[in-house]
Image (cartoon, rainbow over the protein chains, first blue to last red):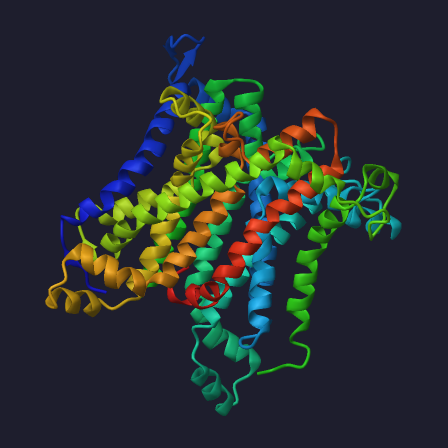
Length: 287
Length: 267
């Protein structure tokens, strides 16, 4: 759409700007303050320069948390995206079952995150939970509070349970914007199932899929509540992702300097990856 | 196109989604003794005692009321300020528009864990700590950018001729916006409200940090009860089951909007 040049449009944006800036700038400046200075309370600050940043960037603890985070985000994307596309493709297009499917599938998205954690905790309890009990009675030794592999499997499965529906809903939206004529034409041409997917359905889903991946990337990179309630970052540190580690440092140990420096590095990593995504997406839209 | 076993994949998927929810529901109807006694698929001694505690104890039911209050305030604020902004982004070019749009999105990318402590200090300093409005305002950080994004997508799908015809007919901007434009993108507003509700309802870290007693959300009540008075699994399960209800109601109301609406806008 060709847009008209109108500087007065700033007035329409102003309320949003004020509200978001209030919530974004002031806290961000607080973080910056702590990141470059040392404080012993009473609003007395000493300049520290980049000491905290060097400390965080060199620490094994940060590296490990970052690697765990990348591994986790990679795993959930690798499972959720294909599964989401698969379910969206096989969902009914018309009739009463559409509403039923949509409502049931959207349900996990609207459950508070700590309830998701608590629900999976209950579900996976080795002796009395539905999943834990079933696995153990099948002879599989499973205990997510003790075994790192079980803890990882449960955390990943929880995220798949929680968020695949977002990808399903977005892909479904993309698919339902395809007119029936396209499919009829493809049938007349004798196109294979794969050809229909590759040349009709996938292009239509490209836009929504980019959004879905962007959202899933951002949210999984910030994940805190669900794994915290489920495993508390354990056993040991095996499921301590970036946010959990950050909260441990900031509120648990009250090391505000390193925590603030880590916050800024963390935020910059997310920003950088999202900027790349966003630029790619905008290029797609211009085409 | 239609494959005979096509329904199998969605059915299995939905079954997988329902299992943990069933586990939670089943546990909420069990007595503590039965829960700790061992595994049972169906509640053996069916009881409503857990729910009775929640509906009679004010510290429990106030949690639900608090959560709903700030979620509603947040949804109203987010959608009403995002509407004109999204219109500006979809219809006009202005100095710094692209940068502004990306900057808004960056706030959606800010990890709440980064902001928890500064938020606490900020809202304590302005005397809003432990109020519903504090949580509602704090959730604007990620909900406004998302709402602007969704609404901009929907608005860009509406031809500009609609605006031009209305102005030729002598409509002023506010009158056009309220009388013609808003009804036209009603589906988009529905979807945007759904997302606002969703992200505000499910968020816990900021809501918990910004409240102590008067505005304490249900999710925080749950974690605090679980840690203070031992692990009362049945009560926890009942409280958890009840938090699913508002979401289920909201989805039911917007189900047609989701189906049609998702396709209209970008999201």
